[in-house]
Image (cartoon, rainbow, N blue to C red):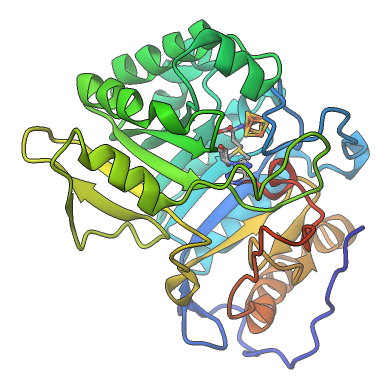
Length: 347
Ligand code: SAM
Ligand code: SF4
C-alpha cells in the first residue's frame, strides 16, 4: 500500500530555466539525488527485503534513458551529487550506460554508488573509468555463516573480493556500511573497524530503519543504538568526535592512530532531518521527498507522456520541493508506517 500525497501547495516558482538552488519550504537546499535503478537484488538482507518480495513489473521501471533524463534535469537545476543505488544497482542490465552518461555531465561534482559488492570484481574498473568517485559497500559481518544468515543467501568471499577490486581501482573514496542489529552482528563492530583500519577505508554504522513489513524479523528487539556501538568501540579505540560533515546524516569520529573515519547514521537516537539535503528517485520514477514519509511526485508520468518537454520536467521537480516534509516519524515499537522497503527506496 502506498499513499501518494498530491502536491497540495502552489508551485514555488514559475521559472523553468533558472539555475538557482532547489529550495524547500524550510529553506533547505536540495543538492543531492539518490537514484534507485532497480528494486531487484541478488541478496535478501533481513532488514531490507522480505523473503518473498513482490517486485515491480518491468514495464513500470524507468528505462535507463529515462533515468538519465531525470538525473540530467536535476543537475541542470543545481544538484551536485548523484548516488546510484537500488536494489542492487549492478544487477541491472547495461547499467554502465547510466554511469557513463552521468560521468560526462558538466556540473555534477560527485557520482557515487551504493552496492552490496557481489559484482564489483567485474565492474570496479569500468565504474572508475565512467567517472564514479565514491563507492559505498555494505558489509554487515566478516563471518561466513552470519553473512549468509543476514543476507539470506550471500557469499562473503565475493564481497571481500569486491572490496579489494574497489580499492585497486582507485576511487576517491571507498566506504563500508554496516547495519547493526542486536544478537545478529552487534558484537562484531570492533572487528569490522579493525578490518576498515587495515584497508584504510571509512566505515559507517547504521541504525536499522522501519521500512517495509518483515516476517521473522523483530526490529524493536534488534535495535542497537549508535551510542551503544560507540561505547563498545571506545573500549578498544580512542574515538574522538569531529565536526566534519558530508552534508548528510552521518556524524564522524576519528582515531589518532589511523586515517579512517568512523561514521554513525542514527535516525532513531540522533534525528538528522534539519539538515537534509537530498531527495530520492525510485526505480519506478517516483520522486520521494523524504525517506520516512510518502510525499512524492510521479516523474515517470511526465517523462513518458511528454518525452521532449524538458521544461515541464524541470518545473515538476521545482514544484515537488514544496511538499518536502520537515522530517520522518520513525518508531520501532509500532508497525511500520512506511510500507515500502529500503530496496524500493534506494537507500
Ligand atoms: N544493494 C546495495 C547495498 O546493499 O549496498 C544498495 C541498496 S541498499 C537498500 C542501500 C543501503 O541501505 C545498504 O547500506 C543497506 O545496508 C541499507 N539498508 C537497507 N535496509 C535498511 C534498513 N531497513 N535500515 C537501515 N539501512 C538499511
Ligand atoms: Fe539487496 Fe542491498 Fe537490500 Fe541487501 S540491503 S537486500 S544487498 S538491496
